[in-house]
Image 1 (cartoon, protein in one colour):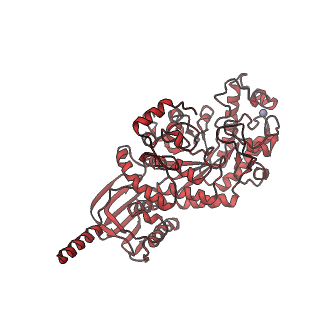
Image 2 (cartoon, protein in one colour):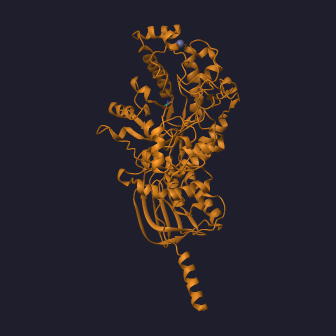
Image 3 (cartoon, rainbow, N blue to C red):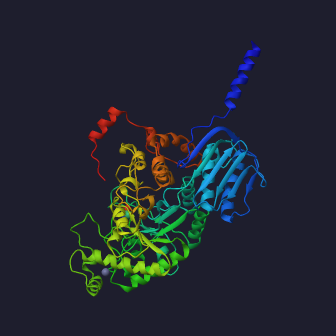
Length: 566
Ligand code: ACM
Ligand code: ZN
């Protein structure tokens, strides 16, 4: 009897140790995956790095090696190893292949991004503890598989607003780490706005002495209120370069945005002579669309823009320089008179340009500003990208837009032969609520953008046949008016950014919400290891404190009573 019990216990232990490859839950799902029987144990195995590999690619593989060593607690020697990372010049820069067999692992790529993505795929195929940064007991095996993968879109962006609330260099690097995990390759950094200027500009010191600080922040949605607490911060040029380099090591280009000529109240507070009235102005403590913008009739404004952008381009090597261009004139305030309607200097400029009198003139004047800035940026060998308001102006070849007021801007840009990044508010604004039970969610700007809606977005819908190549990719935006802590930031970001990554990466026929939803449990385990918050709304747990969602009947009653406003 005792022997039988022993045998049974032994069999149970054996069964527990035998690795069953879990459902393949890599996000974004690679485009070609063939799983086979068997596994390969990776702990303590030697790495071989192709001597032709460039330094950045070697460093990326090295980071993977270190993470593996830390998590397994076993050293992986470098030399003639079973974990082979080979250069295959026939592959595109973002393409990679992985072959895992009982004999080892062979990774092929041609450049940094391919190697980064191969490592990220390998990490996601391993136990989540590889993300934990400490030794962990786990089944350190990879499933046998062949993967051939490359992204659908070249531009895979995520935006971060550090003006409304400021994120430290360390937090921004963590944001970049999360982007890397899901194979994004553009960080659109919204560095300036009415509520705070965040870039050190050496030729305009008051931008960081004055424009980087506000005397308070409005409380909730009461725009007349202020908490009276001084708030702000900025990045030194050295810190900005550090972030650019950190991102570049992970295959991510940082695109800086200097939003102009609107969203400039903070800068005006520092240099009031750049506004139409001369001020005084105060760094904004509230949210919304400010009437005060840069004066388009004053040559000193163009000097300011050029000197600022010259320093910006010196720090940021990105081909695109984002010049904003949104919301110069509040579209909801049809009756309003804006400073450009009454400013003598702007009027003189309008006359010199021969613009027809009337409410349209100010829009034409904005196009003039855009065209001048475009010319300057082009003269430095770069291209402008701007919000879709700039599309109605005279864009030069190589300029691009971000379609944010829906998809129409992108559709129109592509038809006109301009490149566009799709970032429509109704699928890609991660500052929106994500569940139906607002009273359990932290305060948000409005809207309703659940995970499944994000996932359902198809960027080429509506694009004229033959113009598809102008849709460079997709980006989601994370405005931070109502987001003040990292815990809340990641709650808004995740797992919606995971859904975004599949829109950006996966071929149309590879997307499958049921499969994606099933992969999320592994991604939640990864995020737990990374120490990053996320929403569990898709699992019926609502809000930062993850309260159980209402049942169907209660929800119906709640929704019937609710008068949702923005
Ligand atoms: C924007 O959301 N104002 C581009
Ligand atoms: Zn003016």
